[in-house]
Image (cartoon, rainbow, N blue to C red; front, side, top):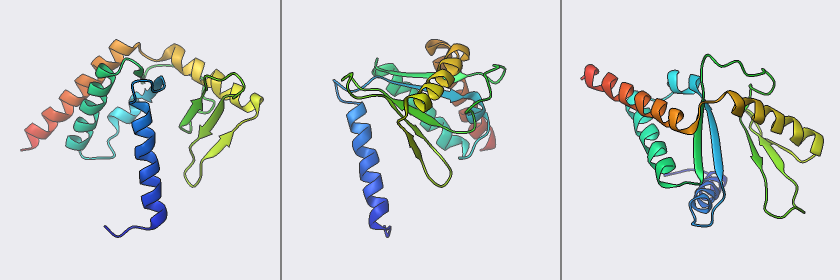
Length: 155
């Protein structure tokens, strides 16, 4: 594979991060996925079905991992819904939380307490209208099954 050194470094860093999440003493990790992302496919159905099955297995096997789905008919506040973001919190109270907001061309890191608080409020609003974990897993399973059915009907 012929790719720039910076790209290889980025892949190695991402893989290292995933390994840290799955350590026995790894962090708690909660994801809220917009149901829209499950409906509008940007990959072939078979790829999406495999990805969903993998996610279901990970969440089922790792009690520290949670996936929740924001239903299409939910009414979250529109603020900050245009971007993905991650809130990092740390066990040491001396380490304040920070937010990584993903952009098209660059990611932004927010460390100011007022900025972080805005993202925390957004997360709380999304969390309050997202499906509970078991309902979310059920929706992921149904979606994977529907995609698998689409593949079978196309063959």
